[in-house]
Length: 166
Image 1 (cartoon, one colour):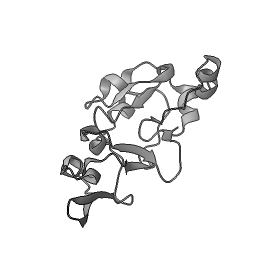
Image 2: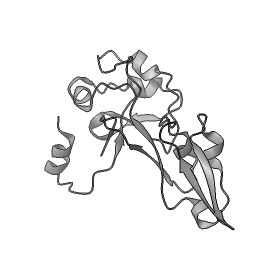
Image 3: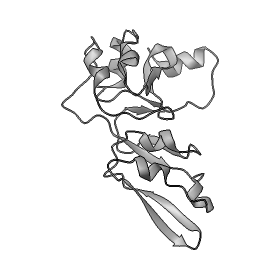
Image 4: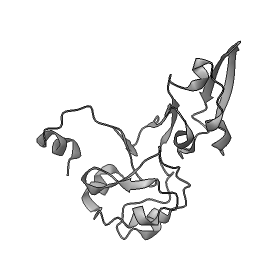
């Protein structure tokens, strides 16, 4: 099933929103071909980050929660959709210009929840600071995106693959 074609045929020609797929997913095509859309992965997710997306396919909503890589979604799935030998995905966070720190407002919500310490602060003068992201460290868990009061952090694909489809 081609979701882009489906949207077009339904008359939806809007800009396509990025969709974050489950970790360890072999490929988007594999999911579209084999996922039964049963919802077991949604029910099994302890953080609630997995939700039903377009076409009934599971997707991750990082504005709600983070992925802890507990692999409950993988364990409960009866379909051969996952490769546990691979890295969970090839995504990381991106800080947008709407970040409060870039507007002189002190905020450290994202830094406080980043377990891998991929985020740091760069001071650029009195009242000016920027949140910097080290993509080599970021695991794309989404914890920072979930707590950001301005929704200024998004989870994006930086190194290829199709875990983040947009």
